[in-house]
Amino acid sequence: MKSYRKELWYNTPTRRQLVNITHQVQECIIESGIKEGLCLVNAMHITSSIFINDDESGLHHDYEVWLEKLAPEKPYSQYHHNGFEDNADAHLKRTVMGREVVVAVTNGQLDFGPWEQIFYGEFDGKRRKRVLVKIIGE
Ligand code: ZN
Image (cartoon, rainbow, N blue to C red; front, top):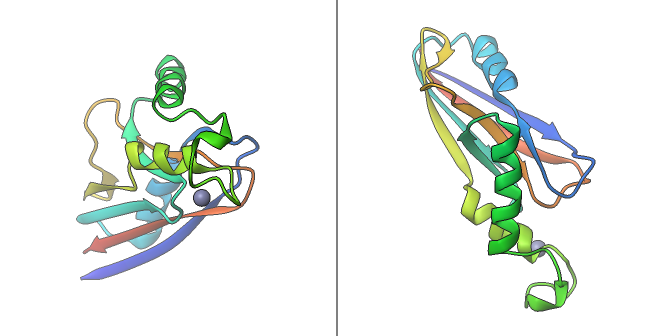
């Protein structure tokens, strides 16, 4: 069995952003040389997410509105976590949107259903943060 590990780095210009990272993950699979196996992708920070959904701008707007209803960024004082930080909302948004995805690798490709794309969800950006890609198989 082969094993491959890579860290992808992101630094979003805004506090919240959704980034389609499907192409970079596929590049990792090509680099790994693995044709059949499993690909794990996880955020390495507790204020960002990895999730799979549609790359459609209306839906991305809907996520922003929905997440702001569930865990509004402001006022910062509404959260106990915000003593020395202001990112309690980002921790909560991360929990809702998930830590990781696992995708089957078949014939050297991400084995997706229709319209599936992998996203990095940033909820406390404007700094360098990492995503782990681990691929196992043969
Ligand atoms: Zn925090």
